[in-house]
Length: 153
Image (cartoon, rainbow, N blue to C red; front, side):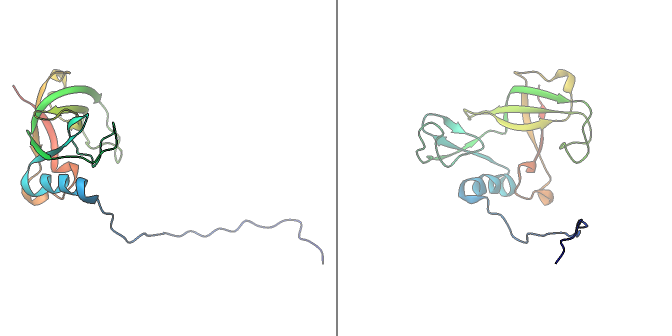
């Protein structure tokens, strides 16, 4: 039997779906439920790290299990700023200019990443900001239940 000298490539176009729901787990789930249902931001006291927001289930310092839950304020201080002047559709969380920020919320010992959409020319490390909550009927249990942060003062 003679072997073929060439073989045409084969291809087939298809869509693969994975119909399952992902669990956020106990700690992240409680944090997200607080945003959605209570409009509250919860952190967790972690040995060697203080109050961590968003909370971890364990210490990154010594791997010990996290401790008590602590409600922190929805106001805080900006610790880092990165302005995006020309957002890219389907990549960035805003279709107008915005800034990525790290916010150390009052009562927390770590900073949380989020965005600021207005008064970008005034935004600096050290600026005070407050959470702007998504409307009650639009909150879904995600970090975007905080729509953004805005400068105060």
